[in-house]
Image 1 (cartoon, helix red, strand yellow):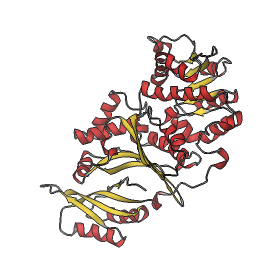
Image 2: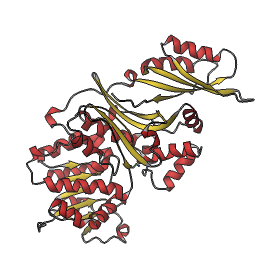
Image 3: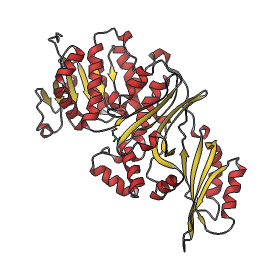
Image 4: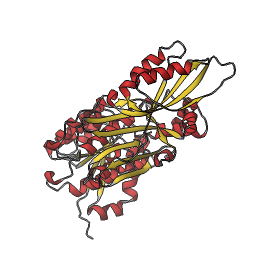
Length: 440
Ligand code: HSE
């Protein structure tokens, strides 16, 4: 095969873990990549704040401290943005687009919050914004949903899409660790974001599920209406109670299409211990997609790290390099559906969501307490499936765990308002959703 002489010229913003991983993968697999693309993909310019970071990397390219120098470099055909942030990164990206450069980005926060404006600018300029690396690292989930499942009507998807939280929950289950101990270890191992709040409070997963919901259902990106709960409030005892009931607790991102709108939510949930998602452990990610023709399909792999994320960045570079000469109207649309065919399905309020629930109540240990709780639930039409109460010698309050049948979240909210106000119950009631992940 004759590899064309003119390489595709890349500029990179950010030479941290992912930027360096991208350079390494491009170099290591240069031969195979050229055979796939028909041209060489060559990094010609990189922006790095601290050039000391480049020690040990063989990079034959211009190095600038100023990211604008890369964006304005006429020799750069494709910009790789792996610096993060939603202010400067947005301005740089829009400038690159206005100069007719294609963009590959791993910036989930930026796309989930401002993707509509960015995709629309790219559309007008006839350039591509590729973002496989923004969701679930090495797992090619964007391509799977947008192209692999393009013949399907997607019903819902549910994913373990934050490796840090999954590592923490795994350690709480396997080792009985507290949340704080497991978080400290996740940071030591380098899984967490610079601000670990984004991981453990659900924001990172919310950005990812928002992007997946858009390409699954053909709706504009709207992370502001995503319901977000994290895992900080979970105790080792909840993980143990869930196990006793036959479940594992996982932080899930869920997007579900319903006739009246889309459910878009991130929260910890009980999943059946026998389900494949329950055995996704440590920092791994997995996404389960339920669609009409394919049925259920599951995508599993490494959701973070230099080489795994670079795997997605380089795949996007290959895609861009292959189609940059094609007519823009014949390329895969950014959000899977043609821009003028996006649907205006609303994001539904949580009160309209239906689920089964786990409740952990701390109540006084005396006769009639359970009866009071059960009465309130019954008055709201909510039925109890299972119950655990542990005796604690000399304890003033005991944990009572209830598994509830499916009900409307709005009804449960009302019942919980009354239960937490009962004088015999401690006001901090923990409520977790139970997801069966059954087909349909
Ligand atoms: N910090 C993220 C995680 C990886 O823990 O999954 C990058 O999205």
